[in-house]
Image (tube, rainbow, N blue to C red; front, side, top):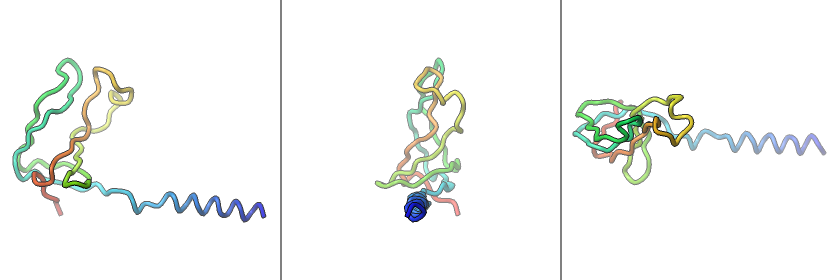
Length: 102
């Protein structure tokens, strides 16, 4: 009986770890200029950042016509946030500014 219970627990564990819900990172290219306020950390804090036509970023498509792109790589500076050195890693962009690269 104990083995049967262990079997069911392990089976449920494997089923809950399904990767069907994982969103796939893909490459997106800006098709029109887009300006956003981003957190850069340090003394500056925030700044306006303009993304030019042709710039390529990895991202994930979300609902409501929004794509989340990675604008900075993860760093040890961002591990213990919030503090003055934290910076923004992700940015939500309307999908009308981006084109999926194939």
